[in-house]
Length: 139
Image (cartoon, rainbow, N blue to C red; front, top):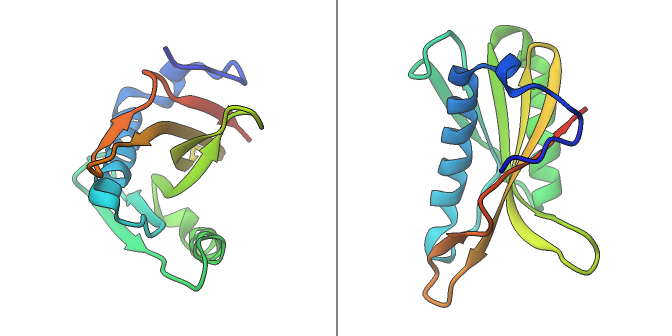
């Protein structure tokens, strides 16, 4: 079940765009398997085809600095891309029930959308998707 805080109709996002967003989140999840640290990255699509894509990682002294550098770069290139997804590791939930999550901040059609996929790191370092839904927010 997909939670939709802002009543945004997913049909307006489009299945091709949703597929690209899911691919970005999957790449983030695969990046942390085995206990690795997720280096924030942007995944962008230049055309209508999901294969016309580029990936850039942003490594800095801290995760927040990496995210800031990525967002600065996005502001420079926003006009040249159809879809940009910034992916990083974060936390979702209330004070009493916080969960690790892969965050995907999406720039699409003049909107900024935020998806989050909660996960659990198992004792062996493998990842289990926590709950079967994504959070969605529209800014």
